[in-house]
Image 1 (tube, helix red, strand yellow):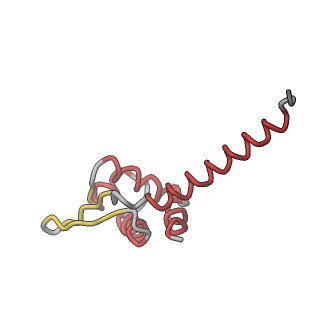
Image 2 (spheres, rainbow, N blue to C red):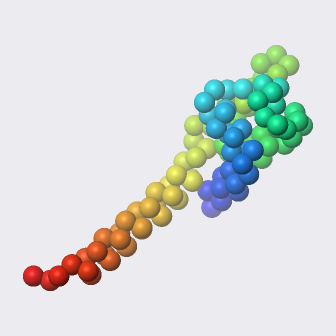
Length: 103
């Protein structure tokens, strides 16, 4: 279940903030570290976890690595959540139908 790795990676608030930042615009480790209260090595570790989960991609630009959100990275997680939401709505509709008077 690929969505589990995405959920685990995004469970950490700092990691989630890093993901949201690179989802808005590709960024280098140095730029990310300048925006967060964590060190560059810590940012690199968070990016590795996000990369391992398939949520970010990295491209070389000279001596820098530029990280960006992976377009398909959230697809499995989204399918999982959409399935849960569909089940919730179906169960809600069944409960409402039980409470309505029969004509």
